[in-house]
Length: 187
Image (tube, rainbow, N blue to C red; front, side, top):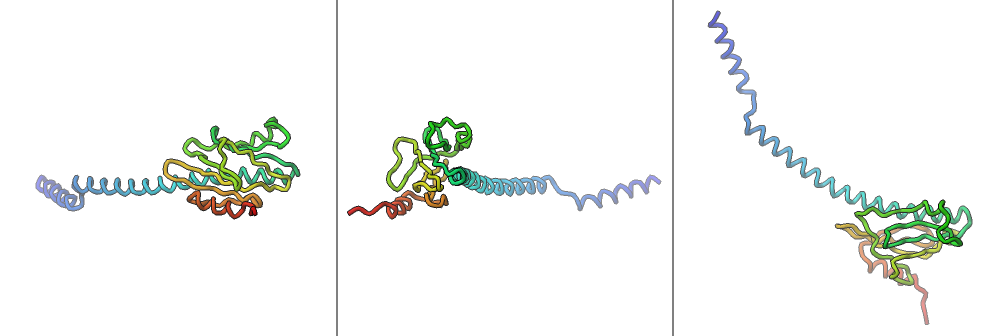
């Protein structure tokens, strides 16, 4: 009986010894998995940065579009305000001095990570750190462009005054070229 037990134990040891992993193999697999996870996280961070930048641009586009819709719907001129110091955009009625809380509540605060650095219209570069853009009752305004930046990227968002459509550009020169074509020709 004792002999059979030893034989059984020996068989068991021999059977499991060939199927197990050594400590070095386990550590090597863990290191490879860590490297792959890091690579995936790095790529996802870049994509997330791009998506967040697009979200801020979409919010600016939506506020502009809603302002134009409001002006058309109520057949009322309004003003779209862009404040570079406070990093906010909002709309108000043209005949009030920001008194209407309903219109003031449509306020967009640019997230801390992003900044509107500059604003350009066909007639001027806004130097006083604030643009008050009138939008007529038909929902039209002067075209304008805002420079949106974060720590890694800079984009120019140009808003067409006739339609409210937004186009993205990488450099200021493209905006200047478009606005030069929009300026009236003087003799």
